[in-house]
Image (tube, rainbow over all chains, first blue to last red; front, side, top):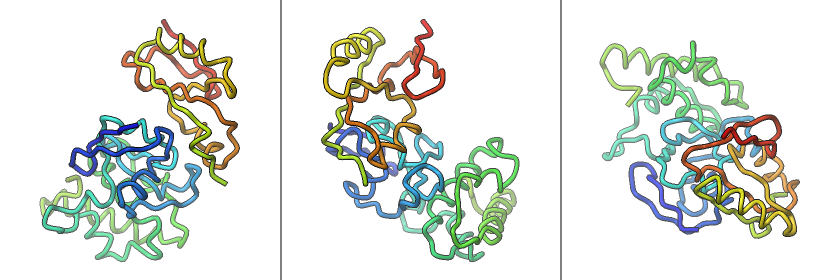
Length: 160
Length: 80
């Protein structure tokens, strides 16, 4: 099928099989390999992307369900000048990364929470769908808190 | 092992009437039709290569969403 979607702010048309995983569409057809495959069965959250702003696991989303919708991957967070999104910057600054496989999904889930604080009571709940195999949760949670603190102080916008 | 995409087809009706007609006409074909709503349950066995080839009846194209989930991915009750 000819699939039309808004991919990281750009109107995009791609020829694909409608049942192809959104994860594979992004990585193979669109060359956006920042989205990682972890478990491939909807448990780990590594492949999280934002679909119309909502975090979804792209290994469980058929490509046809992205038709006409907005998809944001980790590549779509940085500014046009390449400046890191405040949540990305906080992860880098606080060392909220280790092997890096979970990082794109963690950051996108954290950004979704920053944009909709009512969606979870605390960071552990907000990131409950994202597993870190390096057991690095402490620094990840610290990074998210730092980004949110900076946002509340008006220094930068973690919810941007 | 991943399922072979070529073994699967997707039809995307835009109305309940069209969906029911497609379900009726394609039910007798090999693999039958499998309603596809959120896909989160169906895509686990699909990704694992454990889903028999079928035609997905994608319900996302129906604007009024006239269904509710009642249990398994294929148990979808019409609410109208």
